[in-house]
Length: 368
Length: 88
Image (tube, rainbow over all chains, first blue to last red; front, side, top):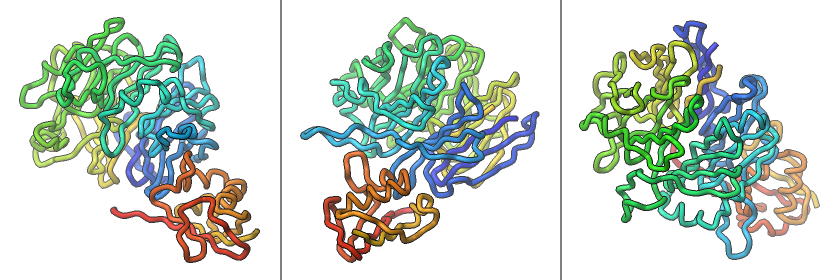
């Protein structure tokens, strides 16, 4: 059984498929009116889900389900910054934006990323959260987020190396990508080769705008990044990103929010380009949405738009709103800001709409 | 010191649907602390980790707006928790 969890601006929904993924049944809403930024299945304990939520009025929190989303319980101690000392900026979590399960060897560990920029860790399955001081109080942090956006920078793409629980990555939008090799005690930028054409110094060490970063589970040295300024690949231990988006058609460009990796093949990835010209409409390019796929690690890209609207479709797909499943014929799914969900069960070759008229979709995550 | 607390609807999930509950304390901070004891989680949804009232909430003691959690609450007062949101 495949389930897609849909975090929306107005609540939580689920789409459940039959075994062949032909019929999808929409259930919900749960938490009607709540703003759901991210819903993530625990890769180590599939019955468990965590959800980042808030409402228009109330502060941010995290809910946990131990029964595949049938019931939810709020964290006893949601992510929060430490109390500021006199003279320090008094930071408060405005929203929990991202959730990542910890390493397989640490089954109760979870990470959360917030806006304003903050990293939090739970060691009890999401019940109590503590700030990660090595990141939140890093002496360079004020400079890393200096060029942040007025409505709050985002902490996202928290990645845990499947070979080493102490090896972490995260993205700040706007701020750049950062790496820790000591479990979060210290962090360093990892942005060499990434364009930041909005900064005065094009060779800046940080201040970049990664929209989404993904690490291949079977080849963890391979990272892909969909950035505000292009699509990139990095094969560690190298430190310089290669702009693989240069192989995209010039008329389409290589701007977008999500990047999704094939669960088994580290050379295959999908992106969904958006319009990043002039005033940044961030819509489908020319109103004709298309997914692009590479099967050679970014050396070439193939347009995949069979079944998608041919014209006048001006939606946006946010960074958490596209995902893949792990079935033999890869399922791909994305949700739009217009409240539609699109699915492909042939690795993107063709698409069909499986839900319409939902609230603005913030995240789409697959649960096995 | 016992007061009445009017709970706005976004917080009713914490009070089992009750729109009015009893509160105890000599200040707003104490009343909110008392609510937290009986309705775990409710305080953080209203007050951030720096002790500030969240942007889309307003607190009143009787008819007077209260912007400071040190504001005194007297027996028989009514504390109003009001939600304020614009847009769709």
